[in-house]
Length: 148
Image 1 (cartoon, rainbow, N blue to C red):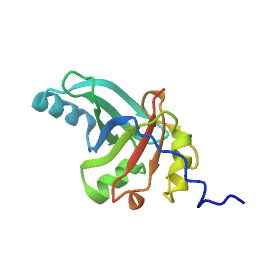
Image 2: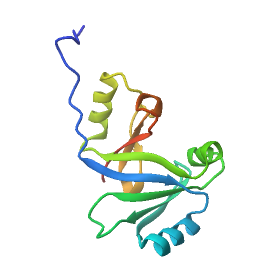
Image 3: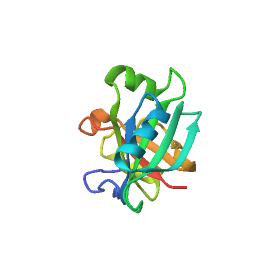
């Protein structure tokens, strides 16, 4: 058995803020609003059947920094549909880029945090993702993103 008092938990390294997720009821209407109102441009759009979500990544400014992700339900039983039913539209998650989502999950679990998935799942554009339970992160749904 390992003595955790002499073996600290593995390091956690968030590389940068990847994106901020915003739940919306209508993706097309939200895309129009963000383009016309804030001058943001859509740089990626897809439907993730596994997650039951239509999503779009918007570039902010020159596009070199973090993205804004718009998330709309693709089906009524999706997590985004439940979020909208419970909380209405608005901020849904804060995502960080990590080099290795599985290693980061191990390190966070060693610190007592719960992750939503046992192993990483497919995220936007083929990335690998997992989430820290919001009750373990100050009420914030934290997404871990390992880019494809």
